[in-house]
Image 1 (tube, one colour):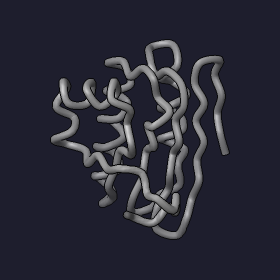
Image 2 (image 1 turned 90 degrees about the horizontal axis):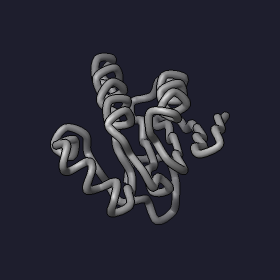
Image 3 (image 1 turned 90 degrees about the vertical axis):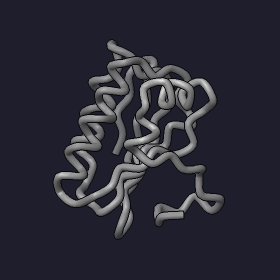
Image 4 (image 1 turned 180 degrees about the horizontal axis):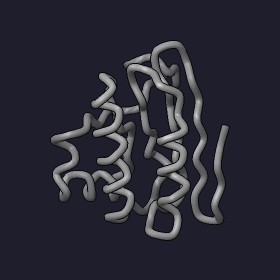
Length: 116
């Protein structure tokens, strides 16, 4: 399952205990709707991993979408985990304090959906 915008691509993969949402491109006011839709459409699992390794730009709109997804998933007893943001996106996460609220992990070497 995936969604594509000219500047953003989102792909969802599901396993037994986790869902991975791979995001590639730019997350800004023009593209955040595709990310938000994918996060809301993701199957319910105990862990939602959002792979940000392919994201070059993360605007305030993208940060808000991640916070909203985190709150929604936490309310149903799950956990949102951000995976492998590039240095620019990682600086945004640190500047906003989001790294204190949502765990940030390195990508799994074997790319399995289970928690690393």
